[in-house]
Structures are given as structure tokens and as C-alpha cells.
Length: 133
Image (cartoon, rainbow, N blue to C red; front, side):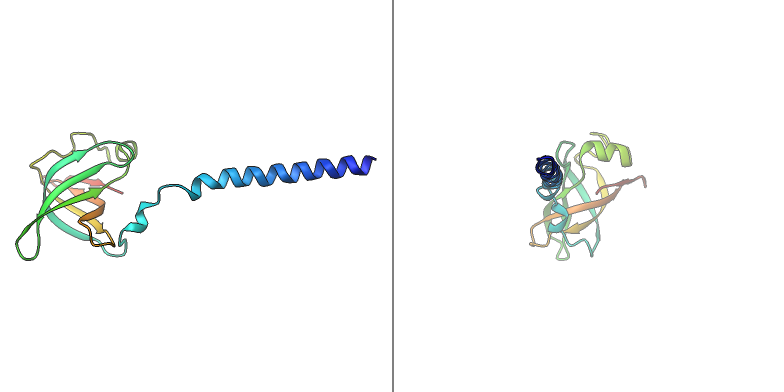
């Protein structure tokens, strides 16, 4: 009888460990992994004009225009980290950039050809650098 009780306890303990592992790993597997959408092996740098900056969760967004190689104006959107990460890593605030600011943006273009990028860094006109994501 004692062996049966010990076996049942062992089974319950093993099942508990397995369930804990499954529920601990599952949120990571279903997390937002947007970096795979971008060609992180190639970083471009452009002189751009800020049109809007949204310092909001889950990702801050930087809208800007740039002249392409043919001299035509294009509208782009850059994805950055969350406001809390930007604040901690680079001292970003909601006023770091404003519409009309001329900046240099460094980033990785979207793999699907859309006019979106993962912003790695920006440099303001006065030379101040801010990490992006």
C-alpha cells in the first residue's frame, strides 16, 4: 500500500513539474517577435523629416518622409521599443523629436517591401544620438 502512495505522489510531482514548465514557456512562445519582419543584416541611414512621433505602448512609432534615389518624397514609419525601454536606454521623452525635425535615422527595412523599418538609432541635427531598438 505504501508503494502505491509513493508512486502516486511521484506521478503528481512529475505532472506538476511538467505543467509548470508548459505554462512558463508558453507566454514566451506566443510573444510579439516583430524583429523577424525586418532585414536586420542590413542597416540603412537616411536624412529624414519627422512627420509624427507616437511615444506609446506597445511600440513607439516614428513617421517620417525621405527623398528616395529618384528624388521622390516617400512616407515611412519606423518602429521603436516601448516608451519605458526608450526612456531607460536612451533618455527618450515624448518631446525627443517633433514634426518638422530634420534627423538621421538608422534602421532595418521590412522584408515585405513595405515602407516600414525597425529604427536602430536616430541622430538629431545637433548630433545627439538616441538608440531605437
